[in-house]
Image (cartoon, rainbow, N blue to C red; front, side):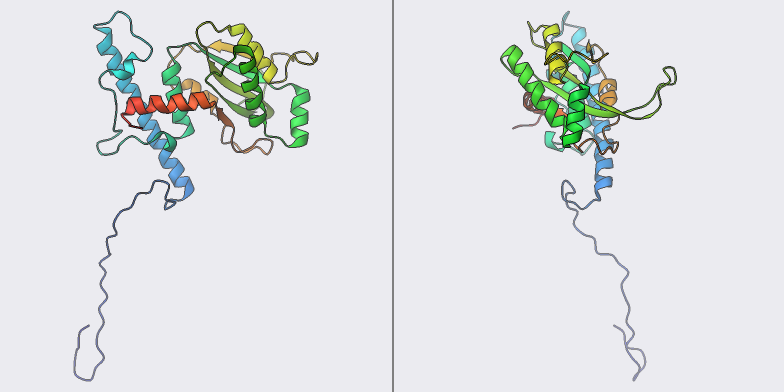
Length: 276
């Protein structure tokens, strides 16, 4: 405050200097709008995936020079793993902070050198009509039935994941249009040594209500294939319509078995140098 001439009012000068606040962590703090935080995590996880894929290629090339055969997980315990940072200063996030996309991609990184049975199955029309009438969650309904059928067949659980989808991109060659369609399920099951692929296919069939109670099987109800190509394409295909609004489906459309989630977290900690 400065006095000018005697008798005059003091002249007030406001400082335009901004107070620099101490930066705080934005992780799960709510200081970012939800959309911005989600967008940030998506872009971050894409960069992380590219970093891990690059490290995997480097490790594979080094191992190929000295070892004639390379085990399924040997690559991930070789230099340059573990990858602890995804940039110069940012450490890898915890498993709980990953997007669903990166969690599924990390599962595929672990499964790709093993027997992974991918499937697309359509729910029997009678069950689908009943689910819609009762406003039941298709994801929970199929999850519980799949777990029951696999346990009945093998006596123990398997690692699996799936997503419920009810939208089509269309196919001009087949004359189909882009838009909503009947809900169906895409997913994958990790096979163990000695597992019968045909028997597990039957378990998936029954979990979707196909071929039970003498009701028969609908046309093209199930398609299965062994996973054979490493990379991001399968998960991109699996989750392509997961965020499209559909009143027939719940907000949560992805399901991962407990065993897959537990082992996926251990694998993530292994390749990123996390300690439990």
